[in-house]
Length: 139
Image (cartoon, rainbow, N blue to C red):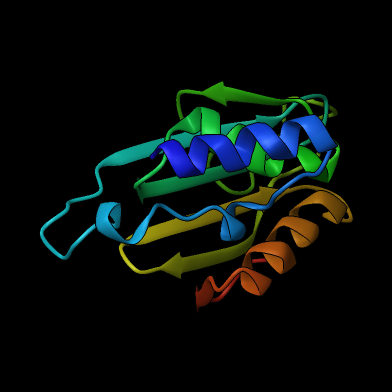
């Protein structure tokens, strides 16, 4: 754990950034099959109609906020994402599923409205990080 904190401190000093795929626990601290992920998180991208739900995550909502920050939005933790086809809070455009991904026990649903620029970016980013599409979208 000290090595991870030292590495993160060095990155902060040098101005480097990491994606969540690059941050790993030391080998001794990696979760085993007996670890049960239970955290769920719902996030809204500030003034945009984009929402992300992560279920069964091993990570906190705060960690997800920092990982999604490079998309260019101020992420807010919300109680739950809205149902598809309901008006988004930013401009009233209907939300739709852009992707549903999974990584091990974790699952992620991304909803966006309009041209879905942010949602598509998030889906592509997470697929590049190893998440796998597991359900068709409605958009």
